[in-house]
Length: 197
Image (cartoon, rainbow, N blue to C red; front, side, top):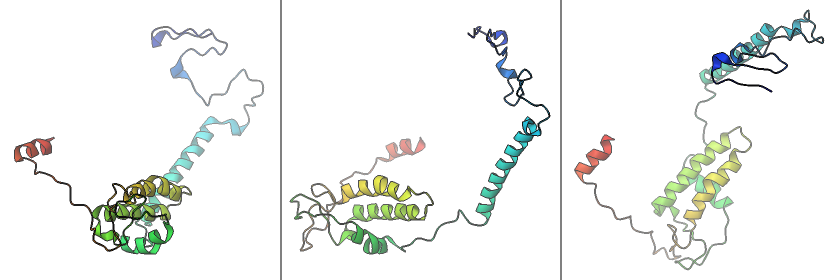
């Protein structure tokens, strides 16, 4: 059993290793009492192993720097040129849901004139940016992550037939979205306090 004293300079050990000071520990040291260790074996040279690890790390850093210089980390060309192209070419073709009757009657709501609704356009733009990033990623889970963490939360709001931005959409096009949220201008003296922090 190891008994530790209160101060570091009095570190004591009664175990069979004879290990007394944690700052003197060398993980590459060869146990001189181990009969299985052949001191003439060059593969046991701790300095050689350390040099190989250091060379591997240097090579990794060089690869990253070279990649940046070659433009590997540069912007990737998107598949769609705009959110409109993405909505018409991908979103409306892939997302298929049972829609409600519309007009605030419940179920899911979608208006084919989605661009009239600023929140819908903003959310779809954000989803498109994230989709392009996931599509270009070399991680196999990137697209799954996009579906679960990006698209589904947006869809819950966009298609919400009770309180969503298109919840009262009508086939005749008479509903053009909810009005802007009311707001009052921030008083000048309060604005100064807010921006000073």
